[in-house]
Length: 279
Image (cartoon, rainbow, N blue to C red; front, top):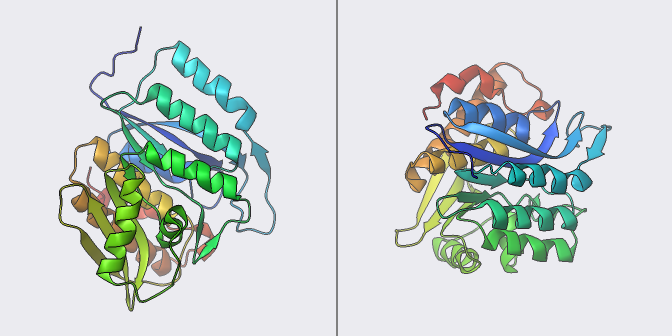
């Protein structure tokens, strides 16, 4: 017998648990909770600190995931949303795909952040088979949040760092939509002094939202962006409005981190201004 959802909504967040560096679940947990949704973490691995540091402790949870999900199934648990982030192996992608197939009901929103690489470079751990598996995972999503590099890799589109025209972005988003998801935001599109996010959704006019670039890139901003989008989706916030809100909040966090002298490797100090983020 399934557990009653009750009045508070729930999101299962599948990502790694990194103790230091503000990324993955250590971002999603406080942000989704702040947005009045219970965040139910699924640790795909445990790290002492993120891999941008010269050394780190790493414990892979791949072998433990089937039993973890199996207990949730035995207890009849259910979720209003499922969001996925970095997955470290082909096997993990397959396990998470099966989890989505088993747990995503008619009203469950699936949000996939296909964390594969950036700046035209795919992570060295990603094989061609993993890229194919990620396309399968994306096909199960309602919403995806790839950056420009990931959008190109998922659609076999040649990557370029600059000079993207709206017609090209529209074609790229259309190819992503052909994989399955109805709502797409392509993030991190360089636009001179601005950074753009291209929003595409079925039956709506596409839009390119731009925010002024501030400082250097920081780890965890993608996790922050995706967590806001996921929580908003479950809360019924319009997709375009959510993307705009997430973009502006990430920018504010970067500015605050610069003001406080937070080292780049330590991500963004969203804790200082989380109260400004409205559910």
